[in-house]
Amino acid sequence: MFIFVISFLGLLYSASCTEGGCLYEAQSFCHFETLKNLQIPSTEEELQNSCTNLTQMKECIKNSVSNCNVERAQRYSHLVSIRQSVKEAQNLLNVTTEICQEDSELHDNFVLDMRCYREVFDTDKEENLCMRYTDNVDNYIRSRLRSMLQGRADERQPFNTCLNLNQITNCIKDSVRNCTADDVVHIEEGDRLRQNLKDTQKLLNVTTEICKEDSDLHANFMADMACYQEIIDANNRDQNCRDNTNNAINFIRANIIWKVKARDDQRRSFLECLTVLFDMNCFLEKFVEKCSSRAKDTAIEIIEIGGSLEDQCPVSIRSFILELLGVLETVTGKEIHVRRLIETDSSFS
Image 1: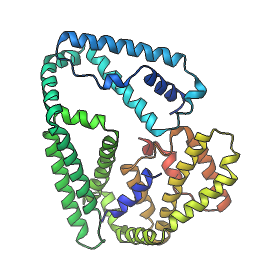
Image 2: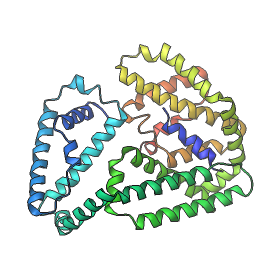
Image 3: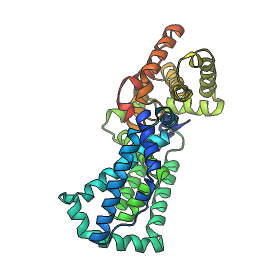
């Protein structure tokens, strides 16, 4: 039933600015990684020492940013992984700063249980039980999702798929109830795992909405489910959309992108965004051609709920992309349906 959802949202995951590059350089220069590797303090003295080190590190980062080499920092600004690293580092600095504020409620609550936290962490560090538990839960969830989201669009499949989804949702709830601090730390330290879980949550959100029999999305999806499946299967077999996208990208790269006054990293960002958009637009065109009048809007709604274009089409390049798509619409005389996805903020959150 939902192989369409997986296939279509998968396009979003295929192939910030100078300030972000400066922060990244500052964090490297000031050895920010040492903050992530510190043990949880078990005494007031250890906590005070950790907070002193934090203050010194923040001052180092502040000075480094103020003396940042803009040209060098710009080399990093386009990389998704670095933008994410800077964002995570800022989050960690924020929470540790809050813990170090002696008049804060979080400080009082942390001090109350920090010896217990330390004991639990030290025990699990030796036995590694929570890490294995978390990996097993994540592998189970993803395995079940893959198996339930494949199959033919027959009459019983939607019912069976939604039953499986309900079982998986209950499993996740039970796992969350039994979650420990060690599980959370393990997830926060694993970039790939955290991104997988974030994507899984989006997928659960959209499939849950489709499974609500009284929802508009359920009714609209069911009306075109067989048509979606037929188009997805045909493309998997013939790769028409990928061929069309490659041809379009090669033309734009040769005739437009390399004539634009921009850095190489900006050009790469343009092409990455356009590749994703052209892939999706090809499917949307086929939905308009072969399915009901609502099929395209239903597909776009699923993308908006279950996916994100934030990494592939960041806000900084949206104006250029929209302008280019407008030119292409004029030249080809065809509507480019994906414009809606980058004209709204919903696809960037």
